[in-house]
Length: 176
Image 1 (cartoon, one colour):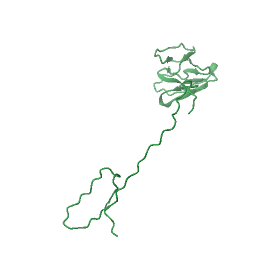
Image 2 (spheres, one colour):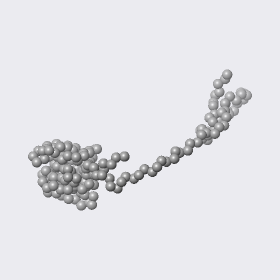
Image 3 (tube, rainbow, N blue to C red):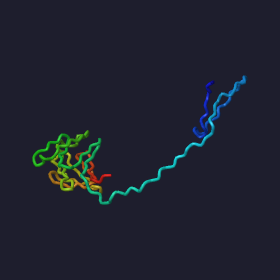
Image 4 (tube, rainbow, N blue to C red):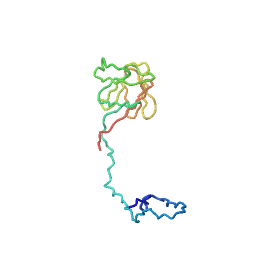
């Protein structure tokens, strides 16, 4: 048996496949192309959609607050934290968990501020830092709290420690 030189694919498999051109030949060689019989290709019908997925409830249970910042920085505020470049939890805030931040501008003090959300509201206390703490709520006006004074930080606010901006959000505890 002689092997064919070229097999033509079934119609519709390759769209607009050009027909092979016969080279001009002075000799009369027999045609060696094998052609498959024409056939209808299967079609696929999409699977019908299932029941509609209910929208999340408008009364989603509030979860913990989250503090997030540049470089993937993210902390859940489930316990009080003391934040800075190299923070130390001491004195009245000895129970706070130290959280270090990376600040290339070096505008964040070593031990800059304390954040607490145990009462369901985030409060920040500036620990007499060099460059201060500022709070920018979603409304836009910037609040410049006095050092040592607890200040409420609403969800959706930006908290500035020196030049470093951190976002305060409230998570939902609903699961899917």
